[in-house]
Image (cartoon, rainbow, N blue to C red; front, top):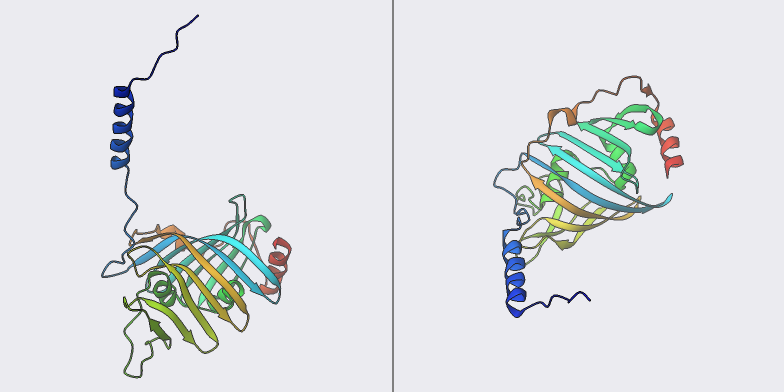
Amino acid sequence: MRRQKRTTPAAVCALAFLLVFLGGCRRRPPQLVPPPEIGSVEGYASLRFSGEGGTAKSRLSFQIRLPDRGRIEVFDILGRTVLYFVMEGTEALLVVPSEAAYCVVGSDEILSRFLGFALDVGEWTALLSGVWPEVSASGENLRGWSLERDVRNRVRSGRRGGVFFEVAEFFGGSPSPRRIDFASERGVGRLTVLSLRYNSAPAEAAFLRTPPPSFEARTWEDIERLLRRED
């Protein structure tokens, strides 16, 4: 019979030391403290939104390059791209790959469809980073938001007209929100930031507003019907 090899106390100690050593060599997660100057923001998030049409859940990636360019890509549960849109200023290119279709719409329209309210690229950056422009003498943010801060001077909530957001959770040691609850006349939702990076220089190709070859131009109404079918 083959004798079973016994594990000695010395071997156990050596294994424990190795695990501790390897754990110490593991790469630390990136710091989420915003840099003094933010030129770009990118990452992943999950979104839940409830409105007149019911409740929708999705995962998305976002890439923002200041002053006015952004890209948001929405995925299904298998990680396939359901749609993406590229914004520049007030205009956006919306693409639905599964239907080989695209349309050109206003940035406000497409953001209202998914969030229930519109944000420009600068406001997206402020919301995701937690870094907002200085307030005016009247107490309002220069973009028209009334902001509430906590004892650590982090932006805890904001309101503008019928739109309201509240930070439910921050990343540790950072003013950047991890979970944001929001509400508007169109519905309520929660944005959960899964990863966030600053000034990582996203590729220029991500912001091209050129539809893929052979894709068919559709009206906004056609695209909405296609999206309802996807939902």
